[in-house]
Amino acid sequence: MNEATACPRTDIELTDFADEHLVYEGRMLVYSVNRLWQLRQEVGPERNAHLESFVVHTRCLGDFIWGSRRKSKPHDAFASDYCRPGEWESRFTPGALPPALEDIEARYRAGREVVHLSYFRLDVRESGGKNWPPGLVLAEIVPPLLVLADLALRERMNDGTRVALRDLERHGPEAGAASVATGAYFGGTISVASSAIRP
Image (cartoon, rainbow, N blue to C red; front, side, top):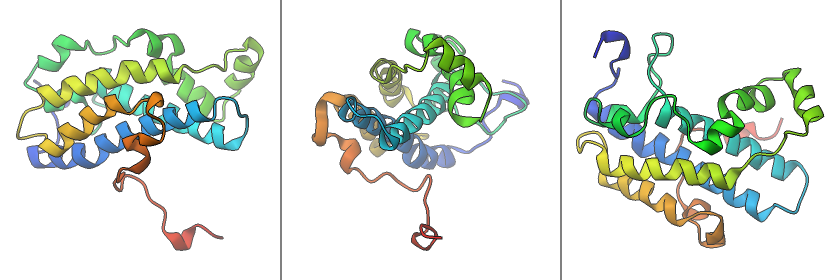
């Protein structure tokens, strides 16, 4: 492996990262899909907020699972960082997105329709292409995370993280209020000081 593609973090840092940030991304994706299911008959800002959350976490996890390190972004995290060299790529080819993610072109749609205020949004409105398939996307992202829970090197992922990743499978939209995503501690990936809530 050359210098440009080497993982820039130690085993301990990878363990801490997965425990806090990878688990967070997985739980937030499950939670947003659950809420979209519960709000499926409604229209309004709450549903939009959960859809935006779904898009952001889909993009993060899609890149983590099917992406590969580039010189321009050497600190991005990838599932392959947690496995023996070549082991992850032999199962999940970098860039080979599964059908639901490929169909919605998650990376481009996320940028054009959510993350950037772009005139491409006019084209989406005119084509009637605003539909996103959260359930299908969840069904394609969770299985690789389960594989990662099994393949990850012991020194790079602790047992608590493995359990948390495996729990994602049991808490899809049909789980309703029983979902781990509605009651689990989410960690500190993002936070807002209570004093900063009000202007």
